[in-house]
Image (cartoon, rainbow, N blue to C red):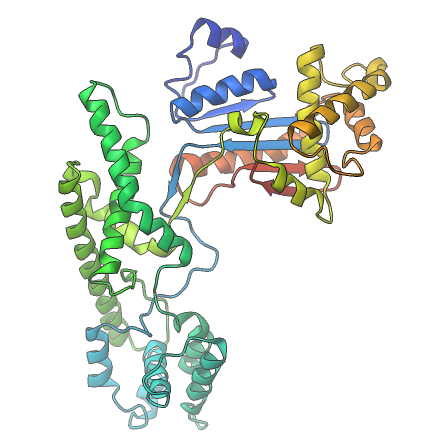
Length: 457
């Protein structure tokens, strides 16, 4: 590993070398005055460079993400839904159940105890649907009725009915149709238009002899695959997402489990092939390269389709503007049970204005703590007006808070800095790898009581 450094003030660097940041893939800015921070943020926004800004003031930590349009395929949700197609079984799965498990009651005990729970669920759903005019269970109460049917499959004389327990445990999540969520439906509905817009930008830049902005190919690839997925859902998928192809562990004999595993994998490959056909067609219509959606990437995309995410971050320039649309968010934050993080954010903005006027943080010198308080109060009043919070009564930032903030003197305390550094490292990895969903967009930490908050400012 090798590295380099430039020991110069960032304002002087940007003044003498305006293109200094253009080659960076990620910028992390710490403790920058507001003027310099906004200039760095403007350059990063113009060049589509991810920016993470950090500031530590006494026991307060501030982290702000300003990323270009950020797309996430592998979001790694904490509670992913099972995709066993119980509510919409493919033909091959229906055939397998009909051939080998047509009558559960007729199976010997040894075979019954190894019936995979997905088969038990299919039987229970089919039985429930037959009693309800072909409908499918959707509400919690209806799923409880399916669970009651599963209980009737028990054989009391069997010492082990692990497969029944597995079916009961999976019932709530497995008895769902693999349809796009409302958020995903909105994303997919916008995909073709977004792709066409990006394609037009690329073609225009090429005509001018310019290079495409950083990350443009990633965006083109994502939106091409999203548009292809939308075409699949509206067509061959019949409103359903492609099969993930994953089969969880379950009680079953080895041969049956492998057969099921291969069945689900074949269905997933067939679905990916259908999405790939749409991708090739759409890429041709938009005059885009045919390698924007390689098969391996499409497979990953379809497997993670239920949890795709697109984040658009407000720029720091917008946040610091006089008419910044942050009043509603801060008003909600100030009304919370513990509004300390929102109060400290207002004090941070006020202290930045204070430092811009006087050249130092409020309370920087011990002898100035008391004398800096009135000036910081004036800056707080100005920032409340700027943030659209001047109508708040009483003032959300009390004199005690102003005094405490001055007492900190702008110190970059090591324990708060270490916490912010850890959070920043995680967010940097998310920004670079596009895995996991980054926070949007401001993380605040009140180290005096251990409270954290995330606001979209």
